[in-house]
Length: 383
Ligand code: FNR
Image (tube, rainbow, N blue to C red):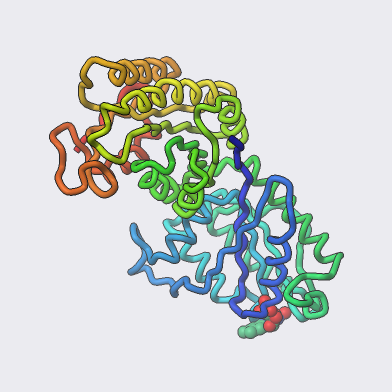
């Protein structure tokens, strides 16, 4: 199977106007083909006006989406007009939402490129300074590059595309500088988390929480049909079969993770068939985990955390697989996550909690995010 590890830049236009010149510039850049980089445009038109009363753990959905998208992107590209010598209100408003919580927001350490344009001969140069100052306040990293301020833009955009070659070359140079800066970005207190089992029950609940915590998530899935879900949740989808060892090694290497989080299981939808199909789960726990360990070793040995169970399994292939997984993860100075039986939405126990040890699925996801900072050993995650 092939792997997808293109770095994503997030493009935001500072104008909501349907025929916006700035949006046209951004669109032109997004449509260009870049090596190893793609530009996704985020539309800020549905972001409500900032209100601290609505900020906190659960900001409005469009804001949550903006923050997740910023956290998941490798760099941010802003293309904006100048309004009254400053930042258009809609852009400032979106950045204000994205900047919270102060000094811990997804903007911290995020590489940023700024382009302005104007019908005036100044090209929005004064807004450049204001936008730069705003990012400075958010602890984002504006990439060093010559100022890209495009004057008399109405003569340079035709049919919704930037057609002036000189301006396009300058703007493209900035995109390349941004892509380069995003390769080495440390994401400050956030980490690059390679999540195996991204589309699974716990994986789906983990991604938004990891992103919210400021981490950049590469979500491994073997199903092409699940990449959209993984991306929607805020992770960079990585399409690869964990049993395809060479492809996996390459995917991990390209993602350059700080952490490999192994949440691999291969369980049937119907709980009644678990023992009949136990061999599949045992194989992914042993062979899948071994492949992940090998891939991690070959990409600078990032920390490994892996899913295990908090209850005693009856003797058999499953119990042996779990024991082997735990042994090999601890041998790598990793962390074993012994979960209780999951219950709650999407689990086998949606209606009724199972017997102990058990853990509600959202709680399990929250505790897992906290466990990223644990030293090597066994962490028991139960209610
Ligand atoms: C402007 N415009 C403008 N232009 C400029 O060069 N300096 C400025 O200070 C301002 N101020 C300003 C304020 C307001 C409220 C508006 C609506 C416009 C003109 C602006 O650059 C021009 O309309 C651009 O075409 C707007 O960008 P979009 O919408 O084409 O991307």
